[in-house]
Length: 374
Image 1 (tube, one colour):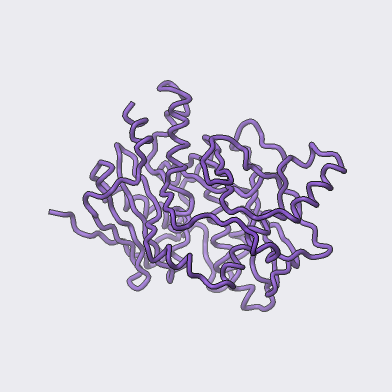
Image 2 (spheres, rainbow, N blue to C red):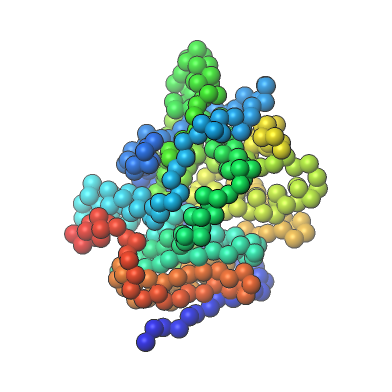
Protein backbone atom coordinates (compact mmCIF):
# COMPACT_ATOMS: atom_id res chain seq x y z
CA UNK A 1 0.00 0.00 0.00
CA UNK A 2 1.38 3.40 -1.01
CA UNK A 3 2.28 5.77 1.85
CA UNK A 4 -0.11 8.69 2.37
CA UNK A 5 0.54 12.26 1.26
CA UNK A 6 2.18 14.32 4.03
CA UNK A 7 1.80 18.06 4.46
CA UNK A 8 3.86 20.93 5.86
CA UNK A 9 1.98 24.19 6.50
CA UNK A 10 3.88 27.40 5.83
CA UNK A 11 2.04 29.54 8.38
CA UNK A 12 2.38 31.16 10.80
CA UNK A 13 5.67 32.78 9.84
CA UNK A 14 6.20 33.80 13.45
CA UNK A 15 7.34 30.25 14.25
CA UNK A 16 10.48 30.87 12.13
CA UNK A 17 11.35 34.19 13.81
CA UNK A 18 14.20 32.63 15.73
CA UNK A 19 17.95 33.07 15.78
CA UNK A 20 19.49 31.99 12.47
CA UNK A 21 20.37 28.30 12.29
CA UNK A 22 23.96 27.29 11.73
CA UNK A 23 25.09 27.97 8.18
CA UNK A 24 28.55 26.91 7.03
CA UNK A 25 30.38 29.01 4.49
CA UNK A 26 30.15 27.16 1.18
CA UNK A 27 33.34 25.36 0.19
CA UNK A 28 33.92 24.61 -3.45
CA UNK A 29 34.60 20.97 -4.34
CA UNK A 30 34.89 21.36 -8.09
CA UNK A 31 33.92 23.65 -10.95
CA UNK A 32 32.95 22.73 -14.49
CA UNK A 33 31.77 24.28 -17.74
CA UNK A 34 29.17 23.79 -20.44
CA UNK A 35 30.68 24.52 -23.87
CA UNK A 36 28.96 26.02 -26.93
CA UNK A 37 27.39 22.64 -27.72
CA UNK A 38 26.08 22.23 -24.15
CA UNK A 39 28.64 19.55 -23.39
CA UNK A 40 29.76 19.31 -19.74
CA UNK A 41 33.54 19.75 -19.41
CA UNK A 42 35.29 19.29 -16.07
CA UNK A 43 37.37 22.47 -16.32
CA UNK A 44 37.16 26.27 -16.05
CA UNK A 45 37.02 27.10 -19.76
CA UNK A 46 33.84 29.18 -19.37
CA UNK A 47 34.91 31.08 -16.27
CA UNK A 48 34.58 34.80 -17.05
CA UNK A 49 36.17 37.84 -15.39
CA UNK A 50 34.27 40.93 -14.33
CA UNK A 51 35.00 44.27 -15.95
CA UNK A 52 32.32 46.99 -15.61
CA UNK A 53 30.30 47.76 -18.73
CA UNK A 54 30.80 51.03 -20.54
CA UNK A 55 27.82 53.38 -20.18
CA UNK A 56 28.89 56.19 -22.50
CA UNK A 57 27.08 55.79 -24.77
CA UNK A 58 24.58 53.56 -22.90
CA UNK A 59 24.37 50.17 -24.64
CA UNK A 60 21.21 48.35 -25.71
CA UNK A 61 20.51 45.07 -23.96
CA UNK A 62 18.27 44.02 -26.86
CA UNK A 63 21.00 44.44 -29.50
CA UNK A 64 21.76 41.12 -31.23
CA UNK A 65 18.49 39.50 -30.13
CA UNK A 66 17.93 37.92 -33.56
CA UNK A 67 21.47 36.49 -33.71
CA UNK A 68 21.54 34.74 -30.35
CA UNK A 69 22.26 31.01 -30.07
CA UNK A 70 19.58 29.55 -27.83
CA UNK A 71 19.90 26.62 -25.50
CA UNK A 72 17.44 23.81 -26.27
CA UNK A 73 14.94 24.04 -23.40
CA UNK A 74 12.92 21.10 -24.73
CA UNK A 75 15.69 18.80 -23.44
CA UNK A 76 15.47 17.95 -19.74
CA UNK A 77 19.00 17.91 -18.35
CA UNK A 78 17.84 16.76 -14.88
CA UNK A 79 20.88 17.06 -12.56
CA UNK A 80 23.20 15.33 -15.04
CA UNK A 81 25.94 17.98 -14.91
CA UNK A 82 26.08 17.95 -11.12
CA UNK A 83 26.22 14.14 -11.06
CA UNK A 84 28.98 14.16 -13.70
CA UNK A 85 31.02 16.51 -11.51
CA UNK A 86 30.59 14.26 -8.45
CA UNK A 87 31.46 11.19 -10.54
CA UNK A 88 34.59 13.00 -11.71
CA UNK A 89 35.62 13.71 -8.11
CA UNK A 90 35.25 10.05 -7.17
CA UNK A 91 37.11 8.75 -10.23
CA UNK A 92 39.95 11.23 -9.83
CA UNK A 93 40.54 10.91 -6.12
CA UNK A 94 39.85 7.32 -5.05
CA UNK A 95 38.47 5.89 -1.83
CA UNK A 96 40.87 7.61 0.57
CA UNK A 97 40.28 11.12 -0.76
CA UNK A 98 39.03 13.89 1.51
CA UNK A 99 36.99 15.11 -1.45
CA UNK A 100 35.42 11.66 -1.71
CA UNK A 101 34.29 11.91 1.90
CA UNK A 102 32.94 15.35 1.12
CA UNK A 103 30.57 13.85 -1.44
CA UNK A 104 28.79 11.97 1.34
CA UNK A 105 25.94 14.29 2.29
CA UNK A 106 22.28 14.55 3.27
CA UNK A 107 21.12 16.38 0.13
CA UNK A 108 22.32 16.88 -3.44
CA UNK A 109 20.50 19.47 -5.58
CA UNK A 110 21.09 22.52 -7.71
CA UNK A 111 20.99 25.90 -5.98
CA UNK A 112 17.73 26.80 -7.70
CA UNK A 113 15.83 24.20 -5.68
CA UNK A 114 17.21 25.46 -2.38
CA UNK A 115 16.49 29.06 -3.42
CA UNK A 116 12.83 28.18 -4.04
CA UNK A 117 12.56 26.80 -0.53
CA UNK A 118 14.32 29.82 1.01
CA UNK A 119 11.96 32.37 -0.58
CA UNK A 120 8.66 30.46 -0.22
CA UNK A 121 7.55 32.20 3.02
CA UNK A 122 7.46 35.50 1.11
CA UNK A 123 6.59 34.27 -2.40
CA UNK A 124 3.34 32.59 -1.53
CA UNK A 125 1.81 32.82 -5.02
CA UNK A 126 4.58 30.94 -6.81
CA UNK A 127 3.89 27.21 -7.09
CA UNK A 128 6.82 24.84 -7.48
CA UNK A 129 7.36 21.13 -7.92
CA UNK A 130 10.41 18.90 -7.43
CA UNK A 131 11.28 15.22 -7.68
CA UNK A 132 13.27 13.39 -5.02
CA UNK A 133 14.95 10.02 -4.74
CA UNK A 134 17.10 8.50 -2.01
CA UNK A 135 20.28 6.40 -2.28
CA UNK A 136 21.93 5.38 0.96
CA UNK A 137 21.70 8.35 3.32
CA UNK A 138 21.55 10.95 0.53
CA UNK A 139 18.40 12.53 -0.93
CA UNK A 140 18.71 13.82 -4.50
CA UNK A 141 16.33 16.56 -5.62
CA UNK A 142 15.65 17.88 -9.13
CA UNK A 143 13.23 20.32 -10.74
CA UNK A 144 10.03 18.64 -11.94
CA UNK A 145 9.96 19.93 -15.52
CA UNK A 146 6.63 19.11 -17.14
CA UNK A 147 5.48 19.24 -20.76
CA UNK A 148 3.48 22.33 -19.81
CA UNK A 149 6.64 24.01 -18.49
CA UNK A 150 8.46 23.34 -21.75
CA UNK A 151 5.51 24.51 -23.86
CA UNK A 152 5.33 27.72 -21.83
CA UNK A 153 9.00 28.47 -22.41
CA UNK A 154 8.76 27.80 -26.13
CA UNK A 155 5.59 29.86 -26.63
CA UNK A 156 6.49 32.90 -24.54
CA UNK A 157 5.95 36.31 -26.12
CA UNK A 158 8.69 38.16 -27.94
CA UNK A 159 8.68 40.86 -25.25
CA UNK A 160 9.30 38.22 -22.56
CA UNK A 161 12.03 36.62 -24.66
CA UNK A 162 13.70 40.01 -25.05
CA UNK A 163 13.64 40.52 -21.29
CA UNK A 164 15.32 37.13 -20.83
CA UNK A 165 17.83 37.90 -23.57
CA UNK A 166 18.62 41.25 -21.97
CA UNK A 167 19.91 39.45 -18.88
CA UNK A 168 22.28 37.33 -20.96
CA UNK A 169 23.36 40.38 -22.96
CA UNK A 170 24.13 42.26 -19.74
CA UNK A 171 26.34 39.38 -18.62
CA UNK A 172 28.19 39.51 -21.94
CA UNK A 173 28.78 43.25 -21.53
CA UNK A 174 30.18 42.77 -18.01
CA UNK A 175 32.79 40.07 -18.61
CA UNK A 176 35.94 39.23 -20.53
CA UNK A 177 37.71 35.88 -20.90
CA UNK A 178 41.02 36.91 -19.27
CA UNK A 179 41.75 38.45 -15.84
CA UNK A 180 41.95 42.22 -16.51
CA UNK A 181 45.15 42.61 -14.48
CA UNK A 182 46.94 40.29 -16.91
CA UNK A 183 46.16 42.49 -19.93
CA UNK A 184 47.97 45.51 -21.29
CA UNK A 185 45.85 48.65 -21.88
CA UNK A 186 45.81 47.86 -25.60
CA UNK A 187 44.77 44.25 -25.04
CA UNK A 188 42.05 45.29 -22.61
CA UNK A 189 40.65 47.84 -25.07
CA UNK A 190 40.49 45.16 -27.76
CA UNK A 191 38.63 42.83 -25.39
CA UNK A 192 36.09 45.55 -24.63
CA UNK A 193 35.51 46.23 -28.32
CA UNK A 194 35.09 42.53 -29.04
CA UNK A 195 32.54 41.86 -26.29
CA UNK A 196 30.27 44.67 -27.54
CA UNK A 197 29.73 42.69 -30.76
CA UNK A 198 29.74 39.20 -29.26
CA UNK A 199 26.88 36.85 -30.19
CA UNK A 200 25.08 35.63 -27.07
CA UNK A 201 25.16 31.83 -26.74
CA UNK A 202 22.99 30.62 -23.87
CA UNK A 203 24.52 27.14 -24.01
CA UNK A 204 27.65 28.48 -22.33
CA UNK A 205 27.81 28.19 -18.57
CA UNK A 206 30.26 27.97 -15.69
CA UNK A 207 29.18 26.05 -12.57
CA UNK A 208 30.56 25.87 -9.05
CA UNK A 209 29.91 22.67 -7.06
CA UNK A 210 30.06 23.39 -3.34
CA UNK A 211 29.33 21.88 0.03
CA UNK A 212 27.58 23.71 2.86
CA UNK A 213 25.49 23.03 5.95
CA UNK A 214 22.19 24.52 7.08
CA UNK A 215 21.22 23.59 10.62
CA UNK A 216 21.63 19.83 10.92
CA UNK A 217 21.64 19.20 7.16
CA UNK A 218 24.69 18.88 4.91
CA UNK A 219 24.08 19.92 1.31
CA UNK A 220 26.05 19.60 -1.92
CA UNK A 221 24.82 22.00 -4.53
CA UNK A 222 25.74 23.35 -7.93
CA UNK A 223 25.26 26.93 -9.05
CA UNK A 224 25.76 28.77 -12.31
CA UNK A 225 28.31 31.51 -11.66
CA UNK A 226 28.33 34.59 -13.87
CA UNK A 227 31.90 35.79 -13.27
CA UNK A 228 34.73 36.33 -10.83
CA UNK A 229 36.66 39.38 -9.64
CA UNK A 230 40.22 38.87 -10.87
CA UNK A 231 42.06 35.57 -11.19
CA UNK A 232 40.55 32.61 -9.34
CA UNK A 233 42.42 31.83 -6.12
CA UNK A 234 43.98 28.39 -5.77
CA UNK A 235 41.74 27.49 -2.82
CA UNK A 236 38.19 28.40 -1.86
CA UNK A 237 36.12 29.36 0.26
CA UNK A 238 38.00 32.64 -0.32
CA UNK A 239 35.11 33.77 -2.51
CA UNK A 240 35.46 36.29 -5.31
CA UNK A 241 32.49 35.30 -7.46
CA UNK A 242 29.95 37.89 -8.59
CA UNK A 243 26.27 37.60 -9.54
CA UNK A 244 24.91 39.69 -12.44
CA UNK A 245 21.25 40.70 -12.66
CA UNK A 246 19.05 43.10 -14.64
CA UNK A 247 15.85 44.89 -13.63
CA UNK A 248 13.68 47.66 -14.98
CA UNK A 249 14.49 51.18 -13.78
CA UNK A 250 12.98 51.95 -10.39
CA UNK A 251 10.93 54.98 -11.38
CA UNK A 252 8.43 55.06 -8.51
CA UNK A 253 8.09 54.26 -4.82
CA UNK A 254 5.98 51.24 -5.75
CA UNK A 255 8.70 49.94 -8.09
CA UNK A 256 11.33 50.48 -5.38
CA UNK A 257 9.24 48.62 -2.81
CA UNK A 258 8.58 45.73 -5.20
CA UNK A 259 12.30 45.52 -6.01
CA UNK A 260 13.22 45.31 -2.33
CA UNK A 261 10.41 42.92 -1.46
CA UNK A 262 10.81 40.38 -4.24
CA UNK A 263 13.92 40.93 -6.36
CA UNK A 264 16.34 41.58 -3.52
CA UNK A 265 14.95 38.58 -1.64
CA UNK A 266 15.77 36.26 -4.51
CA UNK A 267 19.12 37.95 -5.23
CA UNK A 268 20.10 37.58 -1.57
CA UNK A 269 19.00 33.94 -1.30
CA UNK A 270 20.78 32.87 -4.48
CA UNK A 271 24.02 34.58 -3.56
CA UNK A 272 23.94 33.72 0.16
CA UNK A 273 23.43 30.01 -0.50
CA UNK A 274 26.43 29.89 -2.85
CA UNK A 275 28.64 32.23 -0.80
CA UNK A 276 28.76 34.91 -3.52
CA UNK A 277 29.60 38.26 -1.88
CA UNK A 278 28.49 40.75 -4.56
CA UNK A 279 25.41 41.20 -6.74
CA UNK A 280 25.76 43.67 -9.61
CA UNK A 281 22.43 44.94 -10.92
CA UNK A 282 21.97 46.59 -14.30
CA UNK A 283 19.00 48.94 -14.59
CA UNK A 284 17.36 49.18 -18.02
CA UNK A 285 14.56 51.28 -19.45
CA UNK A 286 11.54 50.01 -21.39
CA UNK A 287 13.55 50.04 -24.61
CA UNK A 288 16.29 47.85 -23.17
CA UNK A 289 18.84 50.65 -22.80
CA UNK A 290 21.23 50.11 -19.87
CA UNK A 291 20.95 53.28 -17.79
CA UNK A 292 23.01 52.39 -14.73
CA UNK A 293 24.58 49.70 -12.57
CA UNK A 294 24.78 49.23 -8.81
CA UNK A 295 26.64 46.79 -6.60
CA UNK A 296 24.91 45.19 -3.62
CA UNK A 297 26.88 43.36 -0.94
CA UNK A 298 25.07 40.12 -0.19
CA UNK A 299 25.62 40.41 3.57
CA UNK A 300 24.14 43.93 3.58
CA UNK A 301 20.92 43.18 1.68
CA UNK A 302 18.87 41.95 4.69
CA UNK A 303 19.75 45.14 6.57
CA UNK A 304 18.56 47.24 3.63
CA UNK A 305 14.99 45.99 4.06
CA UNK A 306 14.98 45.65 7.85
CA UNK A 307 11.99 47.24 9.60
CA UNK A 308 10.36 48.27 6.32
CA UNK A 309 6.66 47.38 5.95
CA UNK A 310 5.77 44.05 4.30
CA UNK A 311 9.42 43.08 3.90
CA UNK A 312 11.21 39.80 4.44
CA UNK A 313 13.64 38.56 7.09
CA UNK A 314 16.70 36.43 6.42
CA UNK A 315 16.32 34.44 9.66
CA UNK A 316 12.76 33.46 8.70
CA UNK A 317 13.98 32.19 5.32
CA UNK A 318 16.80 30.20 6.89
CA UNK A 319 14.72 28.68 9.68
CA UNK A 320 11.95 27.83 7.22
CA UNK A 321 14.43 26.08 4.90
CA UNK A 322 15.92 24.20 7.84
CA UNK A 323 12.46 22.92 8.84
CA UNK A 324 11.54 21.98 5.27
CA UNK A 325 14.76 19.98 4.82
CA UNK A 326 13.97 18.16 8.07
CA UNK A 327 10.44 17.50 6.76
CA UNK A 328 11.83 16.08 3.51
CA UNK A 329 14.40 13.97 5.35
CA UNK A 330 11.67 12.55 7.59
CA UNK A 331 9.40 11.44 4.73
CA UNK A 332 11.65 10.63 1.75
CA UNK A 333 12.74 7.34 3.25
CA UNK A 334 12.42 4.48 0.75
CA UNK A 335 15.69 3.89 -1.08
CA UNK A 336 16.46 3.04 -4.69
CA UNK A 337 16.85 5.07 -7.90
CA UNK A 338 13.43 4.00 -9.22
CA UNK A 339 11.61 4.97 -6.01
CA UNK A 340 10.65 8.62 -6.32
CA UNK A 341 8.71 11.26 -4.45
CA UNK A 342 7.09 14.50 -5.58
CA UNK A 343 7.71 17.54 -3.36
CA UNK A 344 5.43 20.43 -4.28
CA UNK A 345 4.27 23.76 -2.96
CA UNK A 346 0.56 24.55 -3.36
CA UNK A 347 0.01 28.34 -3.17
CA UNK A 348 -3.76 27.96 -2.70
CA UNK A 349 -3.37 25.89 0.47
CA UNK A 350 0.02 27.45 1.26
CA UNK A 351 1.47 24.10 2.17
CA UNK A 352 4.26 21.83 0.98
CA UNK A 353 3.27 18.26 0.17
CA UNK A 354 5.28 15.10 -0.33
CA UNK A 355 3.63 12.49 -2.55
CA UNK A 356 5.17 9.03 -2.98
CA UNK A 357 5.26 8.26 -6.74
CA UNK A 358 6.40 4.67 -6.52
CA UNK A 359 8.52 3.16 -9.29
CA UNK A 360 9.64 5.73 -11.91
CA UNK A 361 12.33 6.15 -14.54
CA UNK A 362 15.47 7.11 -12.54
CA UNK A 363 16.84 10.62 -12.92
CA UNK A 364 20.19 9.52 -11.47
CA UNK A 365 22.46 8.73 -14.41
CA UNK A 366 23.78 5.26 -15.17
CA UNK A 367 27.32 6.68 -14.98
CA UNK A 368 26.73 8.03 -11.47
CA UNK A 369 25.06 4.85 -10.23
CA UNK A 370 27.99 2.87 -11.58
CA UNK A 371 30.48 5.08 -9.75
CA UNK A 372 28.47 4.79 -6.53
CA UNK A 373 28.59 1.02 -6.80
CA UNK A 374 32.41 0.89 -6.99
